[in-house]
Length: 90
Image (tube, rainbow, N blue to C red):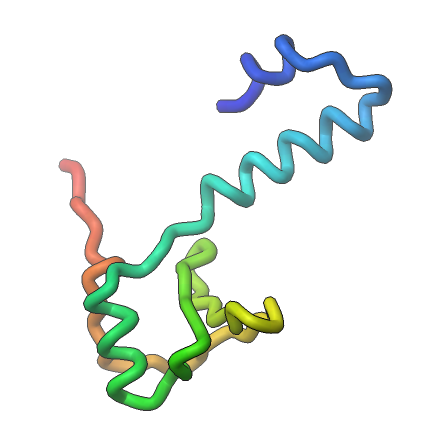
């Protein structure tokens, strides 16, 4: 997906090119939660006021916006969030 960008940027080493592609792929996999989802998580005491959350692949990552410390929220069980909903093609 990002191959066309690598042709436009001059990399001094192959490792720099690989690092660039990996960073682009990570950005693509990071999906923010909606404001409603964040409110639900705060109401249920799963995240604090100074924390935000995003999906990274299938993991719900919680990040403290002050310290940048991250943790993975596990066992969300039956909690249904808007940002989890996907359109099925078929």
